[in-house]
Image (cartoon, rainbow, N blue to C red; front, side, top):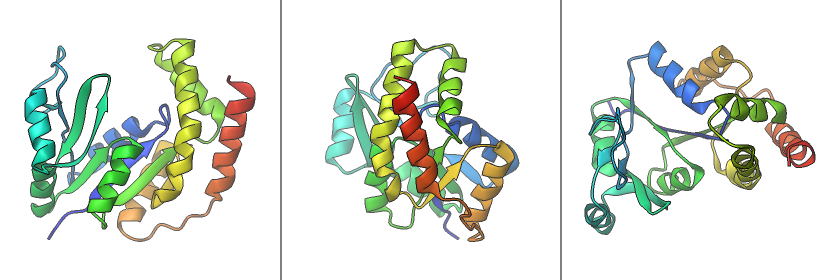
Length: 206
C-alpha cells in the first residue's frame, strides 16, 4: 500500500516545526523527507539525516536530470527535495512529511496531484509576533521582515487543501489525523482569521 505525501507549510513563527515533531511522537507511520543542499555542513549535522550535502555541480546535474520534486536557491545555495528518496518511502507504505516553503509546496502539487497541502496559521498576529520574539535569535528588523513576508505568503494560502489554526497543539494534531482519515470538517472561517491577522500585522507591528 502506497503512503501519503503530506506537505506542511506556515508563516514563520506559526509553530509548524513543533507540530511536525509532535506528529512523529504520536505515530510511527511517518517519515520526514530529507532535503539536498549545496551549503556546508554545520556542527552537529549528519549526512543523510540533516541533509544530503552535495556540490553545486551535482545539484545542477540533479536539476537537469529531473531528480528533484522541487528546488529553490537561497543566499547562493540550492535546496531541494530528492524525488527518489520520497518515492521510495511512499512505496514502502510510509507517509512522508515535507516541511517546506510555499514555493516548493506548489511545485510539488503540480507533479504529485494526490499530495496533501496543509498550511499552519497562528490564532492572531500577537501570537505570531510573540513566538518570533521568544526565539531570541532574531533582531527586530528580522522579525519585521518575517511579518511582511507573511502578508505576501497569504496570497497563496488559497492553493492549500487545508488551513489549520495553531491555537492548541493537541487540537492541531487531532485535526491533522482527521484530515488523513477523511474525517476533518472545517468549522472555522479561515478567510476571516487570515484577514484579521494581516490587518493586525499592518496596523500594529510595522
